[in-house]
Length: 326
Image: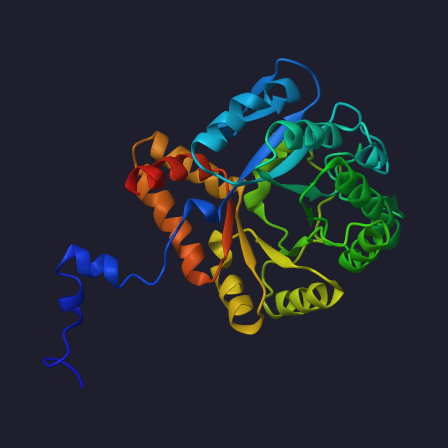
């Protein structure tokens, strides 16, 4: 049956009917807010390329957590910005390190917040790469050993979820086995299974102080021209014990999110990354776009593609808007 018997606009004329037949929804519970914590005291430092996003020292965390809780956001992902680094990133598994200390503080003061700990070495190495450099490149297996030590350290400090973001082969399996042996069988792994070598990460490197001192990350992060490879990465991580997968970036990779959703029965988290955030900030700052409408449309596109949840620097402002509409 077709026109004139079928008129799809009949479902659009009335706003109540439009709301009734929506098939994609965005909830505050779907949002995960990134928090950057740095060494020092009394620090709230705006990130140069990410307006209204900040690095916080631990004593200043209540300022941002009060906003997170008042906006009913229930999940964060935590990134560390340490003063001291080393060649191998060993500082990342120091029991008194920046993230370990922050975790203890957050879980004591805000136990209701789910804390996902980003698990990588790039913030902790002097060269800014995601692992140990041997013969001019990141050595996979040595890096996995260090990541596993970091995982145990973060779990002991109170992380609710671990999110390895390094893209080393086999790290999910090693981390899972080590967590289980150390009594952390209930700690989930949300793996960055598909992380592309992307130009969209530029502002994050201001936020995390982790720009590589030489070379790039193309020998371990994925080629953005590839899509079938992403399916292999997802399948391997599922087989190794990943409980959910993160796809990064999101906005230019909705096709990947959709393919993963169609093929695998696993929760998908889209990472609405720093470059995506900063483009919106720049355009809205010049009044070229309507900020909230654009953000909402972008986030809905990620849910429509198949994302279960979204990591986004827009989370606070969108949560405030969603709460007002309840």
